[in-house]
Amino acid sequence: MADVKKGRTSLASRTLTLAVGDEAPDFSLVAHAGETCLLSQFRGQKNVVVMFLSSAFSSV
Image (tube, rainbow, N blue to C red):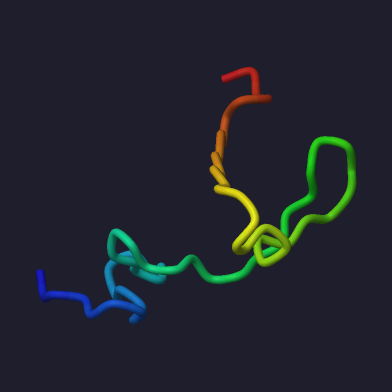
């Protein structure tokens, strides 16, 4: 498999690749209370951990 340069899209996975220490791209998510949060809202203020639990609410 060919090396994928930082910030490029991998042809194999079609996802943006980041290296350890890279700044995450800005994105928005709906929080548990229903409000929309932007990652950039927390820049320079606190550390952020984002977890994706794809089957957390499924019966699988």
